[in-house]
Length: 76
Length: 216
Image (cartoon, rainbow over all chains, first blue to last red; front, side):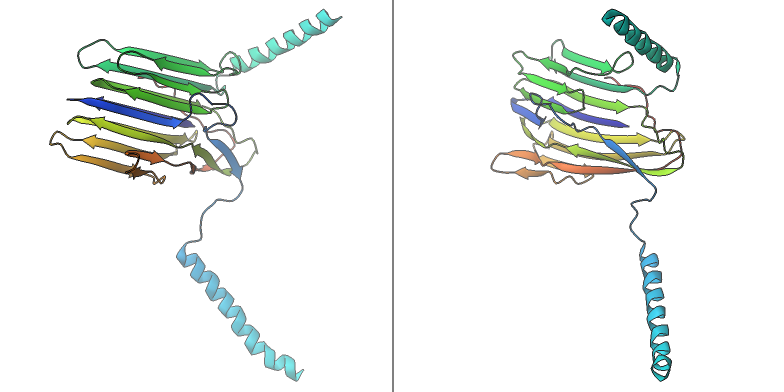
């Protein structure tokens, strides 16, 4: 794991000022910018559109079956 | 009695250290920072500091700093990986300011394959640049992971302020969008605080590893 920051500059012709700051080098107490790694058994993947369609189709099918079953249940 | 306990603890620590050192797959945490200024027709002024946990845990911050007629600059990294970079330059020449934090072995110890994700902070800052034609100021941040068996992922964001040889001034943003934008009142590109993440992928029981410490 690698976290790298590079600030490079080339100043030609004239130099009024080149100035930069990234975080604060005079205050580096506490938790840092360096990456923390977490492991889990599931990926963070978002469902693909096709998977979402399959899911909706399944829900629609269940709802359809429920509608077909409902009259029989009323007679019973 | 106290001396005996102290020597026993020291002996135990030495044994543990020796056991760890003998393992070729020993994880390594490394911090490195460099600042250099090279005037157009002159000698480079350079400062570099590096520390690793090869022989002992990192307990001190490292800094690199330079100062002179060209201006001052300072970089630092704390033991926990908190970092900072700052510089002001008023002279023609080349500036190189780098920080590198790496960890060669963040191991998946669960005993089964797991998905891994890296979370990190981009702590914000600014870039201001008034140089002549042919000048530029570039900010490049890269977070890289590589799983032991080779899968490599990267988060990169780059901001470049350019004054080209034709006198045209532009700001180029590339890579991941971290919300940096030019503030005309301050005449600077401001980098906001940003919480980034990088999908590392499926990691087998073993580890995540990365290369040697690079230096410029």
